Each structure stands twice: as structure tokens, then as C-alpha cells.
Length: 171
Image 1 (cartoon, rainbow, N blue to C red):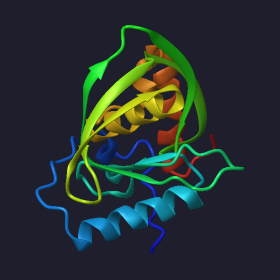
Image 2: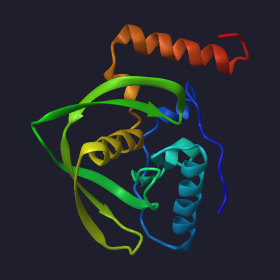
Image 3: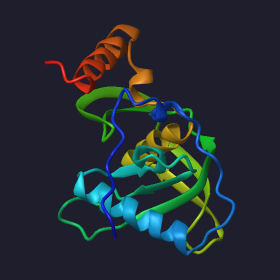
Image 4: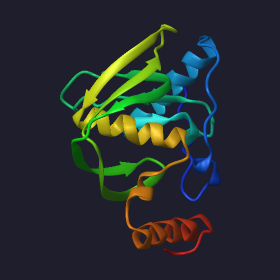
């Protein structure tokens, strides 16, 4: 497995809509394994393929606590098919927007249809942290970032900060 470099804001690639995956093959599963390795190294609890520069609808998640065994999940072509009316607020962060966190309100529970490592279709009913993480990572596949849910003023400040940093200027 290989640790891949992360794409960081303001890279325009983060705004690209990822393409559906046609076949589950050894190359795709190796990419998923590399993504898991990259996510664990970061460390993070979710990673979309676009965050390592691959515009394909693939994401990996592991919301196991530090004192629990790893529980890696791979989602190919994930799609939210149901969202609860009930809402929840979590403080979110993102490996592509390092060291920035903000409270984001999302549906408290979701049902996600996806293809698993086995090439078969699955349905996952998620709530709590897993629901938030799935929505965050699926947003990435659609070119949406968690900062899109905060006020325009805060979002512009974050983008400006990362744009300056990418040009090598003091922040």
C-alpha cells in the first residue's frame, strides 16, 4: 500500500464532480487500499478519491475509536437514497482543509446505496458520526466542501488563508 499526497484547498480539483466507476477490479481495490493507508496516516476518518487527485466516485471511511479495532469501509459509487428530517450538528474538519474546523448541520441519519469491495450493491443505514462522515465524503464526490455550509464571510476567510499559504506567503 502507498500513502498518496493529499490535495489541499484552494486546489480547483476539489470542486470537480467525480465520475462513476464502471468496474470493480484489482486496480480499483488497490486504490481503495492506498486511500485507507493515506487516511490512517493523515490521520482521518474518511477520504474521497478526489482528495488524492483521482476524480472517481470512491471513498473510504473508518469511524472506529482509537481504542477499538480498525473497521475500514469502502464505498464505490455511493448515493444517499434517504435522509432523515431530524438534523444533527457536528464539528467537522477535512484532510484537504487542514487544521480548520466548523460546526455543520446535516441530516442525523442517512441510507446510502453503494457497491462494496465484493462488487455487489449494498445499503447502509447510518446515523451519528458515520452518517455525518458519509455525507461529508459524498459531498467531496460532488465538488462540495464542508465550508460550503458555513457563512459566506467565514468561508471566504478560510479560502483566502489557504490561497495565501499556497502561494508561500505568511498566513
